[in-house]
Length: 118
Image 1 (spheres, one colour):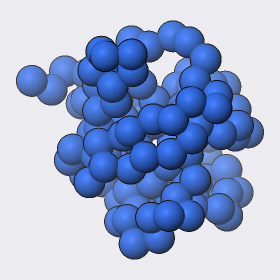
Image 2 (cartoon, rainbow, N blue to C red; image 1 turned 30 degrees about the vertical axis):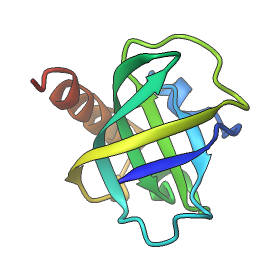
Image 3 (tube, rainbow, N blue to C red; image 1 turned 180 degrees about the vertical axis):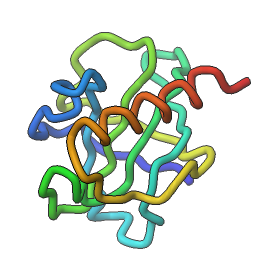
């Protein structure tokens, strides 16, 4: 599935956890399945591996359905830019973690699963 939209400001929680994200509204995609995905993003003609979360972010008190995408090996400002994110493979369901430490540990596992994928 391909999701397109403008990168919006979030609460910068991913950044604080070491995984900054490009956030996009899913208002136009109400039926997308929640979960964590191996994804791909093209920026300025270059394709990047990415990990994306489709959901409400229950571990941090979120309520709004968002797409959050951590773009591996990308550094830059994407606020206000339109992105196209391809959800390649679902890795797991979104879940509520008991602590922020548990969330960060799982994000690290997801990151290396995606980064090391061939």
